[in-house]
Image 1: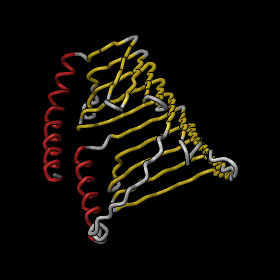
Image 2: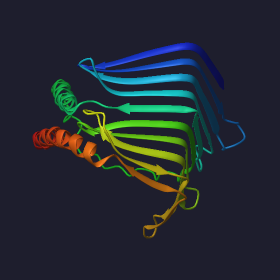
Image 3: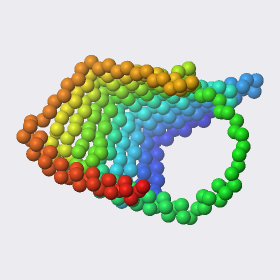
Amino acid sequence: VNVAVVFDSCDLLFAFGKTELSMLILSGKTSALLESPKESIRQGGSMIIYAKRSEISLQHNHKLLLETQITSLSTVFAAESLNYKPNILTNIQCNDIHVRIMPETDTVIQFVKDFKSKVDDVKENFDFSAGSKEAVTKAEPALPRVDLDVSCSFSNVSVELMPLSPLQYRQETKKLELTFNSQRTQNFEINVWDSDVYLGSHLTKQQYLRLSLGNISLKGSSILLPSIIVNAEISASVVKLTFSEPHRLLISFLQDERVASSSLKKLLALKRTLL
């Protein structure tokens, strides 16, 4: 079975209460292939997804929580021996990716409260205890071991975060590669080329520090049975740390400290209400 879909534009919108998740895909292509020979037990399949440009945004009460822009996204999935010993291969590539999560702390708190309230309202309309009254004990067949081979390659990666208002974290990376496979042992490798990390203030627009990293390589492996053994090594070529001028840093920090303390108290109060 071979299926192919080509579309010029795809716009999706998911709404849950006051929260909206929108997705826009431009110049997309999707193809899928499923092979199941009659004289062979080695079933297989593959899927290819390509998008020239894709955008994802999450809003709550018309306030932006998350925004993602990706250019030239290519994803390949391949699998074989689905009913015997599954072997799954995944490859993801993209040229430009920008992630921005910069909501104010008050916006995040309101989003969590409204979302939890909406989930509670949905639960009241469904009876989840009906199926759990009688315990069913059936011996489930052992799942076959799955061999995974995952590789990702991203170029021009930009990330903006505001974990606590008004402190802003920004990272720009020229190239990022990740690999993972679990054929015999679980091996992973992360390579980063030319990455800059900035920490500043969203309130005063003052940059506190800049951390410049050259080529970074992180390799590791793990064995789960009979005991967990993890080996890891990390290497970096260039590390440079630059601070802002002391008097400007101090003036900005005094303003940010009051706002950050207030934001932290609000998050701790939210945590107590959720527990």
